[in-house]
Image (tube, rainbow, N blue to C red; front, side, top):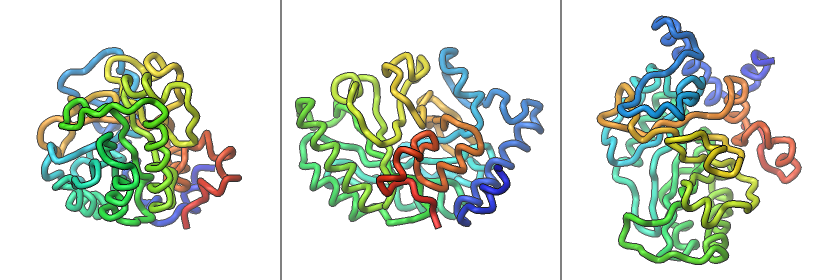
Length: 278
């Protein structure tokens, strides 16, 4: 089954097989095996130990990581990277364009995220994202980062209905621009205040650094889990957020092939989403 799936993948997704193979060889060389614990955290928390044993590991980066050696990170077992692209209606991460090209050239699965702010219109933010993020069929689905803007000059905090309206405008624009169903990234506070109990067809990427996601998000299904912000990865200066994909190698290949969580494909394909890449 897996070999037939690999042969049917487009070239950009078949490149991910090399990352999996390299990671397996590196793990076996160290005596841990593919499913052995993956090191790389300055302040590991025991409650998220399971994340370090899962096979499809990734990172998310922004200007703080500066110049990244993506081939080195890939050789160390990193399979994917989400990178900050835009924020609000007028900010572009200064390392976005170089990160995008370097990750793409290295063959690492890569995607862009937009940090939503609450002091400008969703339509303005959508236009800014579209202006700055390439239409790249080989990229991962885009990510909408949803948090309260506690550390910015924007102190506006819309009510739940207004926030949900802005979110749906942004998700729709990102999907139309990229042709892929966006991923929702969020933290516990924003999920509790706005997203809890709300249906979205989108995959969720959940931050939980001191417990497994189901313990903090009322059993919200997740596709990606950010399990530490104190990660250490070869090729990256300083600490970096580390993440994990929920499934195994075959699940990952199906995600690359369709841009959707494999568990949701049957429900979403009748809506015209999750169609295999060509």
